[in-house]
Image (cartoon, rainbow, N blue to C red; front, side, top):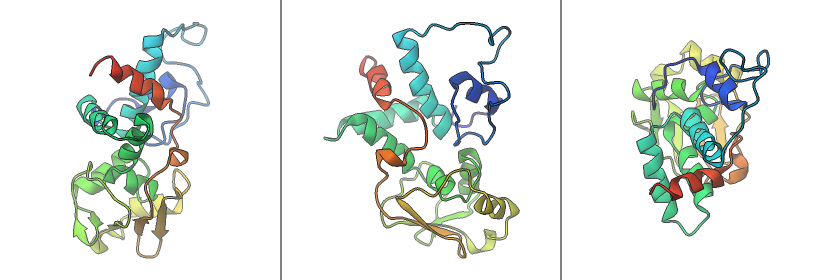
Length: 204
């Protein structure tokens, strides 16, 4: 699932909220779940399904596997801060997400591709690991030889989200800096992280 290749709009319709990390597509034309008769069907959510949906929102939006999310949850639980907030922070600190939030890529999958193909530098060094954790003070930039890419230019001119307060961007040099750790207010995804914590509490 870390590299979901299925129909992205289908997931947006399933969860009923924008998944800006996964796709720019909107479900405004068909604001109901996919499937025959879904428009008129009344869906009852059990407590388990509510928790599962919140967890799946994180997986699809950030493009992480179940194994990766579980590892991050284990790490978050070791913190003295609220587990849900720490989990969201760790997801926001992933290099592919930072590239996306800087507006250097239209989606997280596109950002992951830039990273994997060696177009991204962190503090002047090429990094090709999407899960690399960016820390305050780190500078993330498009390599000089890659700055002319049309996809990058188009994304910078029309970013999917506003620039988060924990980031700063030098548009001329296509370089951004993490000024501080991401806060809960910086999370663009509509998610109840406490339900995610409760989901894993029974499985870890």
